[in-house]
Image (cartoon, one colour):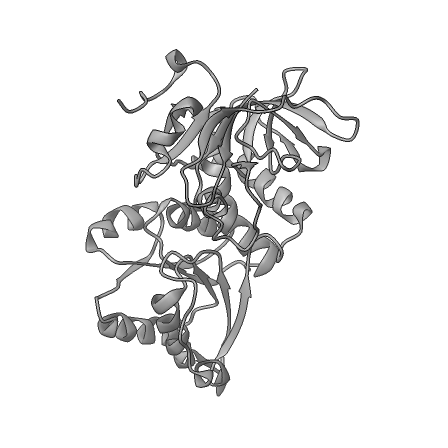
Length: 329
């Protein structure tokens, strides 16, 4: 059986022959059709994620495929040490989701992880209420763009997006954002913009960046006041693209109504994650959710693993002739 294997943290994963996966009594055997190279998959393969596996191990967190009876499914996790990027995986029944027949498998593989990040954060952790205001910090990537659409669907009345470039403004407003705040290099103008929006009222901050941009947001939350007291703000971190740490004064927390929380493995149960992903995948068609993605054969993984592309890359164990986009030379 072929699989994408992490042999050492510092090395690019390789397409190798591994011990075949056989059916087990406590799991379902899935023939894998597609697995996205997500940021989470890359972090785990590099040993930089807080959920660590010891090499060698099969890479990948989640994927899509078929059960033995032909049923189309999404799976959240395979039985260790075989990760998602293998021709066959064993999956616990409670971690399987039957997919709508009309949903393209590769689209499901591409959209599940980035879409789940906001769906789970807004429903399972912050319990977003109808009519609330959401600030999405770092909205220009695939996850942030989906977060705009998902927040709107879940009832947000006002959505504020942030990013580092003016060029994204029209795209994000077209997706449903009501405002777009651009981060200047020193974050001074950004701070002034944040003061304004917090004074107007923010209920939830969905943060994909952490690091200095998140510290800037948190330091301005004190300007949100309501009835002579700090307004409650649920600040939820789902990513750390701008850094794994931040420097924040204690005054920023004591002088505001900020409640810090996170959404990810550990803060959410498997049942909650599966529930969020099921709701997401069964809403893709109705909400017309889209994501840019490319499909490549898993055999080319060493050439494409580190590609910095705005498109989500999905690996398939199918035939090269069936690809939507060609593999690199």
